[in-house]
Amino acid sequence: MIKITDLHKAFGSNVVLNGVDLHIKKASSMVIIGGSGTGKSVLLKCILGLIAPDSGTIIVNGVDTKSGDREAFLDQFGMLFQGGALFDSLPVWQNVAFRLLQGKHRLSKADAHDIAIEKLRRVGLKSNIAELFPAELSGGMQKRVGLARAIAAEPQIIFFDEPTTGLDPIMSGVINELVREIVEEMGATAMTITHDMSSVRAIADNVAMIHNGVVQWTGPIGKMDDSGDPYLDQFINARAEGPIEAVR
Amino acid sequence: MIQAIDGILARIGRSTMAMFESIGRLVIFASLTVSHIVRPPFYYHAFLQQLINIGFYSLPVVGLTALFTGGALALQIYSGGARFSAEAIVPSIVAIGITRELGPVLGGLMVAGRVSTSIAAELGTMRVTEQIDALTTLSTNPMKYLVTPRVLAATIMLPVLVFIGDTIGIMGGYLVGTNRLDFNSATYLKNTWDILEFGDVSSGLIKAAVFGFIIALIGCYSGYHSGRGAQGVGAATKTAVVTASVLIFAANYILTDLLF
Ligand SMILES: Nc1ncnc2c1ncn2[C@@H]1O[C@H](COP(=O)(O)OP(=O)(O)OP(=O)(O)O)[C@@H](O)[C@H]1O
Ligand SMILES: [Mg+2]
Image 1 (cartoon, rainbow over the protein chains, first blue to last red):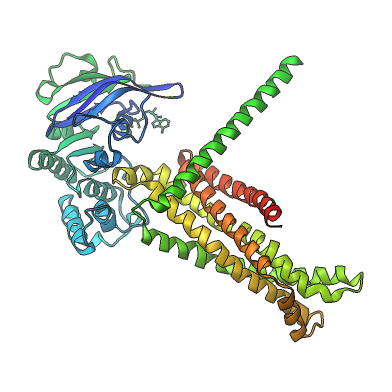
Image 2 (image 1 turned 90 degrees about the vertical axis):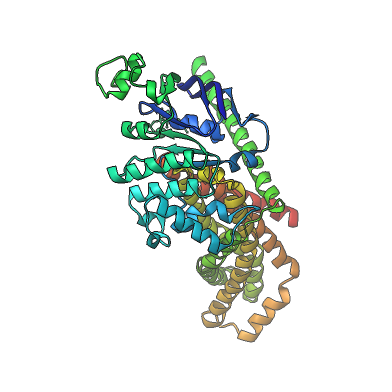
């Protein structure tokens, strides 16, 4: 479904991605882990074309992202940004229904509103917040509105950048289940960045760990605990001592 | 010594290159903006909202500026004219000065202060909070959705604003002329009306349209390419108002020469 080969990206002298290879199978859930600032968000943005990579290829559904129809390409994606990135000039329901209200297949306002309410319910939000503006919500609520917006048009490929950060444990559980449902029931392909190891175990079919600009380890979730990789071991067991330096 | 001169030359060279580069990018940005006017979809709702934001809400600023400028101009022309006993020229000079030059230039500058900064701050914030990226991932072209409606609205609304400003400015002159300078009301109005030609007003309105384009374009460009964080947005806002104002003066000279 998504095949990344030898991806490089540097910002000035700051080399972030230094030859990333990764393969994500259709209708599977890939979880990306790795230290803060290792380039996980940059990787997602490179796939979406929001950041231009320096070199390397990204093939989505058999099409090189550099060629082909950009609009059709983006139509198959949903993205939850790490910071939410909600449109603060629009009320919550219009944020969620944004894509449904644009383009050739636009729905009527009433239909879009109904879908927005339904998606908000799926992320554990009541309909009474639909008319509020994003600035009037708590951080965790904003995150979930962003999540509802990402899944509103039922895209084939969904990227979640830290979906459970800032949520209470019960809400995290709800969101983990939601991501699983989207993959299993809707057959979507999901790529999730998270620092929350319980989320990793709940969501992932496969795990990839990014370190030093490359994929340090990747494999099925079942093999994560006895990978024998010292970097991965240190990371998933949250140890301060190990090959990964604490000060980076 | 030679090294120092070398360093200075290198620096001048670099900044000249950088200047041409940003001019090039601005030109590309402008052509993209214009090309989106004719390529569907067109976001009517966003466009109408900007007509109101840029046009309607700038009325008080432009109106007051024109009113006081018209009044001050009448006093100045009177004191200048009195030196060759030509006080009667006040209505004509006020009318021509306002419509050809002061209406569009001062109106443009005031709107630049109000609109290009607010556009730059808004788009800059959207850039740093990734809202512009989010638009892209929701299959919406941010140039089309954010930039084109603003630039089009400003280009259309500035002539409207300046036309209203012209009227108010002439009225300012009239009020000062009749109340403070003992002009006869009917004569003042007749003199104004007789001297004004279509070209005086239309040349000012053409200028206004160009200034409107510059104001919104520069605001959008600075915001769209804003640096990161609150500092980035602050810098974008400052750049927007300075660049827009300077470009307005430059464009004013060129247009005055062309429409002379
Ligand atoms: N637009 C940009 N311009 C310059 N540098 C950037 C930009 N975006 C990211 N970076 C740099 O790239 C590196 C990786 O950033 P990224 O946001 O991908 O980290 P991350 O792995 O998502 O971290 P976290 O887990 O904290 O979110 C950082 O050093 C950051 O400073
Ligand atoms: Mg990140």
